[in-house]
Image 1 (cartoon, rainbow, N blue to C red):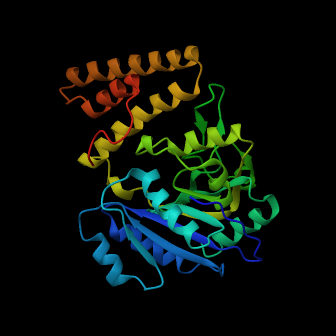
Image 2: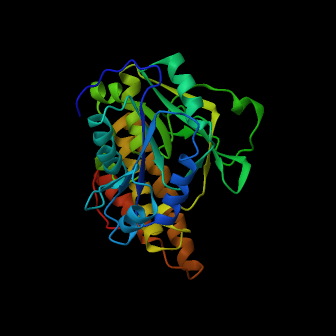
Length: 311
């Protein structure tokens, strides 16, 4: 990705939405983005090798002004966003707003992010407030703060919306479902590590950016809505079980990379103790053990990364 320099009064924002086998959610996301009141933005839909009718749906249902890019294979979340970021930078974007396809937005959400950008500048990542679509009074993300171990995050998920969480502030980490990054920052420091494939990449990225002096700004006035389903369904599908594998594996990989040996080993002991108890209880209750989770723990201990399971 080449470095870009911009100084326009209304900076160009490219909104990158990654789709994987859920065109209905992606269309709903795009429809909400079309109502944004910010004047200088473009929408880029990345179909991450869905191998269904997603791409055909987008090309028939969406206006020609939107860009649809087919990756040809599932590159993972960071890989899909990287394809979109490369396109955005090649076409003069100053900022990239990265969105999960199961989000919708308020009409002024991008304008609110841009107000913060004009105040705090390029050396910063920006993250909106995310509430649940079914209950706007329940938080999904309201800034994320590192805890004592240096990797665990408090993101206020499932907490009720309250005044102190509706104040914009600097925090430690964005949520991968919605964040904005200046392209100049990508040119200087790179983008997310694609070896995670799914989950954990944004935390790793923010930890790396902290070391480079980059800040994270939580923008409470920019409101978005999380549908809670996304590409992995309701939790009972094979895709959901495989997603759990990556979540568990990458939690260990993230800590192995970013924690001291002593802190990592303490975390690992707690995970193993909890999983052994769960494994035993599954037999007592005549339930099938969660083997995807077990494999995730084993591969995380080994430090394995990349696309291990095919969703």
